[in-house]
Image (tube, rainbow, N blue to C red):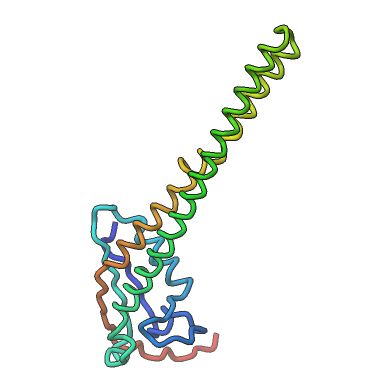
Length: 186
């Protein structure tokens, strides 16, 4: 596996969102660039620092936007890391609240089931109500446990990846201009 995310561009503007009105250092990366970088970086070992190598035409070497490319990539992923961390904190807060609610519903269902058992002769109906209440109580815990155990992991992984990408070393490589190809009539 290659040890760097390699990108070959014809123009430095290909990496940025073209509709972004902000100055260069604060510009959004294009969705295609983000997906390309994150997809390739996610395949790298988690213990290995990430390197991003951007190949550009030689004539773009002196452009100001090329000189700030490393900062732009780092700033984007640092900002994105913060956004994902915030989403994760909100999801976990929702999960904790839902867990408290689910535990309260479980407790009420257990009390209801025991009360039905104690107040009636233990027949089929009371057994059905007691077991049904227990099932409803456990079902009430399904969503909070799903949030806390499973839904949070993808966000955790995304936050780690974006933090690593914000610390990635960006290298610029310049290639000579490609001569125009003559048109052939076939």
